[in-house]
Amino acid sequence: MRDFLHFAKSFGRAFWLARGILLTILLLLLICSIITFRVEDISFWDSVYLSLITGLTIGYGDITPVTFIGKLMSICEGFIGLVFIGLNVAIATLALKRTAATHRTK
Image (cartoon, rainbow, N blue to C red; front, side):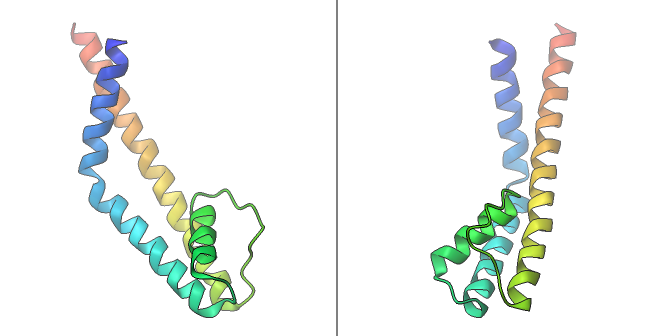
């Protein structure tokens, strides 16, 4: 249990250090959803939903872009989502390394 708490603390620290990047990613997704809202015939909240589902690489398919710009925004959101996932994996790996290093020194 102590190791898990150390991991959670390390993860929180690393996550806090990367907050600027994470906020930039969220801002980019919001910009993509605003552009999608302007070019597609869907509501603002549907465009936010589409951006988040695409950015998280879930892709339910219940709302799909029709216009070229909308499709281009979906491609951008997919790449943004890959960066987001990669960043979270890197943060978790760093936290695990720190936890293992402190476990070895004890």
